[in-house]
Length: 202
Image (tube, rainbow, N blue to C red; front, side, top):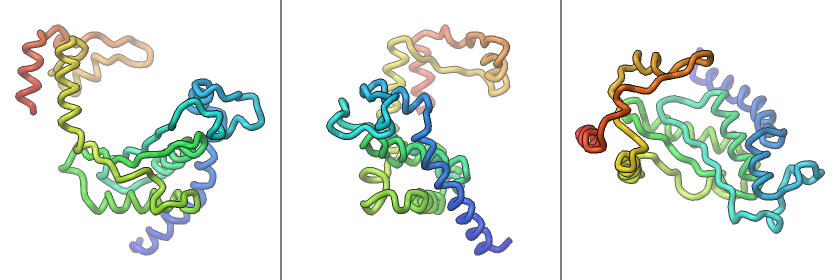
C-alpha cells in the first residue's frame, strides 16, 4: 500500500474513532467518579458531567498523555488521547504532553513529530490555543536526575531494592491471576548493597 493510501486510511479511521472516544470521559467510569467524589460534585445531578469552576474545590485537575516515541500512534492511543484530554476539559483542568523517552535506542524524532501532529489532529476543534496540551512538551529524560534521587531515597528508607532476577524468573515470581506471587530472594539485600548496585548502573 502506498504512503498516501496508508495516510488516508489512517485519517479515516481516526475520524470515525475520535468522536466516539471523546465521549468516553463523560460516561460513568471509576476515574471520573473518584474525581467527582473528591470535588464534591453531585453525581446524581443532571449537571454532574461538568463541574463549573466556582464549585470546584481544587485549583486544577491535571491529566497527561505520555507516549513512548518509538512508533506511530494506533487506535488504543487515540482512545487514551481522547480520554485524558476530555477529563481535563470536563473538570476545567489541563492535560500535559510528555514523551516517555526512556529508551533512546528505539526512539526517533520522526515519531515525536508524528505523535504531536496526531494529538493536535485528534483534538482539533476542541481547543483554542496553538496546542491542546498545557505549556511545553515534557520529556521523561529531563527528570532523570530527580528520578534517580527518588530511587536512592526509597532504597535508604527500605522501600525499594535492586532486583537481579532474569525476565523468565520474574514471570515465575510475580504469580498469575489464580496463584499468588512470591518475594524475590534479592528483596533482603542490605541498603548498602542496593545503593552500590544502583550506583554501578548509573
